[in-house]
Image 1: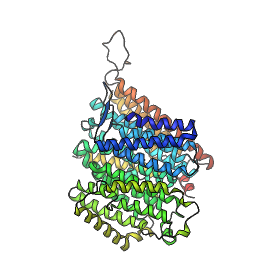
Image 2: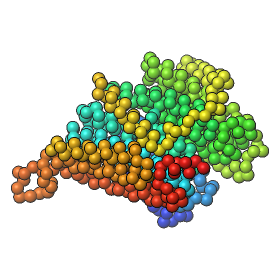
Image 3: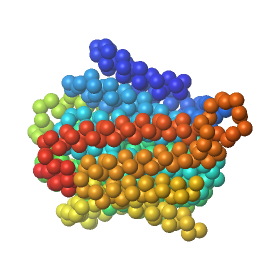
Length: 475
Length: 113
């Protein structure tokens, strides 16, 4: 089954190029295959693991944690496919989508360091082609930056891999615990670059906001998750690594919120929010998979909803209003990210907070409140039909699909404890109060944009590595 | 053996310094390649820990041979590194055609307009 998940989309992509008439059908079939088989794994709670005989730790594995990520993959790609069916697209783009889907599935089932390296690089290259496939200068430069930075991260990862092999003689993830600290820190840094987390992830706002809408949805919804799943697996290996990852997660959540507070551009705002949401995924590895699913679906929906807005400037949107369909989608997805009951975000957030202790709990609660306050910018936009452009109705199907998924998974397995509901309500109200008081006005201040320059981004990765190494050497 | 390892690590560091401080896009991409060459050498060096002979079947099995696993896997990273550098260079060519500069700061400024 696992091989079908990886090879199926690849085959669908090739067939789609050869016979363009059935391309969409083939793609849809392979995406739905991913959805159904990952749902099966989650519901049955099984773990499939294939080991290479006489191996060096080389294995592929699917357990419910990985299945949540694959489900995100399937759902987001189905929605994006529905979205682009109505627009004339090159068969080339469809092929890239199928390949990206297959290689992301491969990332989620890979369970050893070297397989992981290969599929992460493969995914990066396909994502690079996808960002740059319009051949506009803006997109090309964006794609070049993305590939360059990711590759530096992966080089660090590779150094870590060979250090692990040197110390234990195999590539299994579990061998990391015996390897020197430096090896696991190098590997973590590489994955942080991929996952867009904290300082090494500062490339993310630019890359995700400058890409085309369906590409942004895919990048923010699924592609960043490929770095998060291995980090979750590492965090579960040993308490030491677990605390490193969760502290980085808290830093990422705070940093992302701070940057998002000063954004005027709606797509950049959403990308900064991704930067903070990945922190929530990492802070509680046990609940991270569900959170990643909730965030992926909601963020893809938010990005697709921005496609038909008349402008990307938030203050202008507040004056002119948006169409009812965009507004509905923005509200539903925004509420899910805020953690409103009956949306999947609520279940995920409750699960995350259940596994937090002491100071982490309070910092993350503050972060969740600020998230609610910041997303209020999207929730309280006025609705005005006259600004809707002709043809803006044509993508409600994708948004309806995503909203339906959010509600479905929100209603199934909703926590029943009264305290959880009360906490969600208080978080939301306090957040909106903060929005009214000062958060809503922060984006009048403009932050210097120097930190986003290419050379500084490379530097940030190295700074993060140095910080980690210093902390690794000290105890 | 140890001076060899130090030299390999220095290659990686030199590549990293180039990636960090070169303003020319082409030189920056080449520095990336230098860095990945250093890492490939590190793999080969690690493989040669146990011996230097190629791991093939010979009449005299007593002589120590190199570990084939890192050599096999590094082949994949050579190919990946090569294709990434090729893609980056194509991208840089395409960018430089429209703005005749390779200076990273200049490109970044043009992009804003």
